[in-house]
Length: 332
Length: 294
Image 1: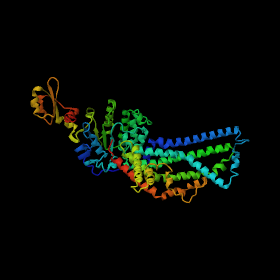
Image 2 (image 1 turned 135 degrees about the vertical axis):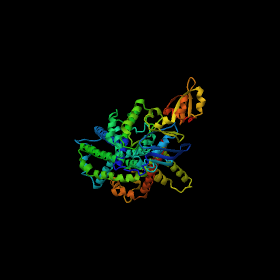
Image 3 (image 1 turned 180 degrees about the horizontal axis):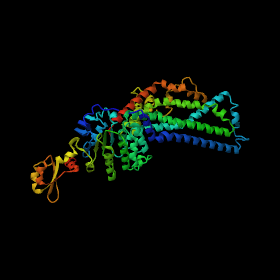
Image 4 (image 1 turned 90 degrees about the vertical axis):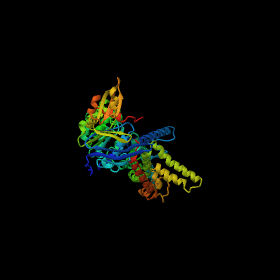
């Protein structure tokens, strides 16, 4: 064992899962940009048609509902400006979100296959012929799922966000608006970007129970790990619901589905941790408040919940179980 | 680097009373054996005799009962240290299908302190393998070439081969053992190999072990075999006299001739019966394993 081992194990995971870790975020970001541009073109064409039928007047520059984009910002009230800022930031978050949505699925299926596929094709015998401990191997897979893949999705998301901002700026320019006063000024792309980076540690700790559960199923199942991974928690949930309906069990059905079933299966999906962030004291009244929800303070308030830590401990326990199973599993 | 403290015995492997129970089978039944350092040992047995189970025990891939010392380590508790000194090729098709030649080299170089990349690349230069090639694009023979190049570039003390040439054509099979002998094996290394293709490896083995029903039924140096075993072709009239010497096995040939295999009977006593020869490993194997599948 030497110090170089862990990075090379991560590279190994990257090589094997380049499609999911690397290409999927890029493709989804690209798809988002493509659809955005197509929507813009549709909008432009529709506007032109509307203008042709006399619903929209054009005198030298494009007007939307009679409003010149250039004068829009100058005539805005301060409150509207705040809403605009919030709206811009929100659309930036949306622009970056596609790779993150894909990330959830990629990591889910990556974890399910991580310790199963190698047994199925017997390549585990090759990996085990090298001086790499089972703990190192399994933790490298945990790190890939909780850090490597999210960082790559983040990179793609940020790229999509800035590309989106540039595209929209060009459109604004085309309509003789000033992208600086309309978008870059009121919006805060750098802040949004920093906030997205800051979600990474929250996501990492939050995702542990799902990563642990899926790896455990992956190391344990002789066939069909997906079925086992989903069937066990879901049937437990149904059982609890059934008992609850019969009033013989004083357990809240909803509580069980939310805190056990969903935590085992869905915590790898980014943003599911919003559930435990504390929004207290924030009245939501339009986009400007929505953005306040995403401050660093509210973001890291998730670490104050017991839920996230109990989940993390359970996740680590299941990961250790997966290590042990990989060490002694003898079915190939 | 961990230098095992107890490795003064001259043994690469020492097993005492190995027992492995599967739910409906006793795969190892108090097996005892020693594998001396610097030897090429063939572990030979019919299907289901416990060969692979024994190898899995040596490689620390499963739990078992009994005492087992591999290069001074207990494979159950010290597997991580042990694997720095042991290499194995379990079967032809176990390299991951997605991996490329250059990735495989980089990975092994990254995790194995005793891997010599230059050596590996030199072995591969003589093959048709290209750095960008994936395992899934290779023939079985090429996969084995890659695996062998990786393994031979590791300075290990024990190499375990489980049916390494299964499914290969004769050219690859010959090349495989040729390379092992020419470029790899020396007096500090020990090779343990299982295979069904007895005839092909008998001339490279220094020692042989037969395993049957989870027990080691024969252990011998190859050089000792001619002293111990003799095959005699005799005519029908002296069959009864010969049978009195307790042949291990007998089989009939056309024209009333009978071939008998003797264990530990002096050649001078057999000479009068007829023509003598040293049996091949395959003959010995068949005689020893008679009735296994009955």
